[in-house]
Length: 297
Image 1 (cartoon, helix red, strand yellow):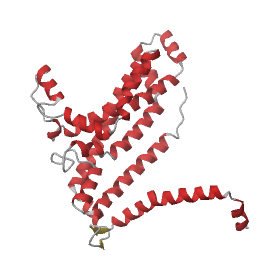
Image 2 (cartoon, helix red, strand yellow):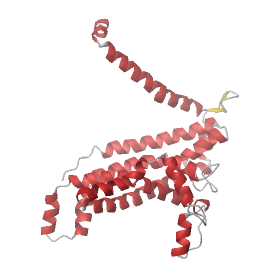
Image 3 (tube, rainbow, N blue to C red):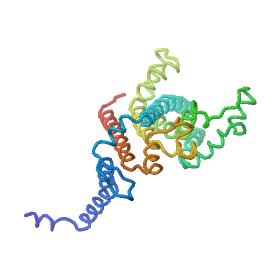
Image 4 (tube, rainbow, N blue to C red):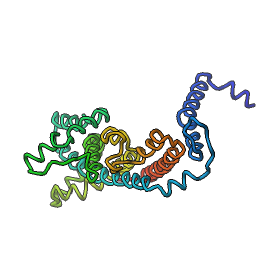
């Protein structure tokens, strides 16, 4: 019976299924299993493997750098979401009130940094943040009479400087998503509000923002995931080793990278990777649960 069913399967479809299964196994499943295996080992991948059980996890629970890196990721999420979505709401609302070709131009201008490589953007902003002779330092000194800032060399504001760059770069995506949501809101809702005497500001807070809840939920979920696995911008903007000065910009991904490839403690690096996976999995579950809700205009 089973053999007869196999004969009825299209051979091309069967080949595609096998290729997809093989790809998933090689690219996703096997690396995860091997990483989980490494988290119970002490190894530099050269001199062999030594089983240490839960020692890596116990060390992680006492590692102050790990918790400092975790806090940096949490801070990254909070600032990126609060400031990023707020500024994007304002910008998308302003673009929504424009018409014709000008709306396309404004949208394209905001979206241009999105399609630019993160490596290139990080290098450019690194020059903008350069102490004393960088553009930002010169502007603050000449126009605001502020003492020259060290920016990325200052442990108090270095992480915030990176977040500001990230907010600027990804503004275009948030604007496009929110703008699409605004265009889906029936104009009759605003007309009824105007008849009732609601001001534009009141309409924005009592109509636009509540009806953009699906888009805002989507952006919160996506950017929480991005902020939890942030790596490239910190790596490119904080020198060698990355995460400085004094670990003030070190995130979980940077900590994992340094433990594995700088200290050659691949077992402990794999342990940090497992924790990152658990946190990301929790955020994905939140996203799935959030989108099970239904919204009506």
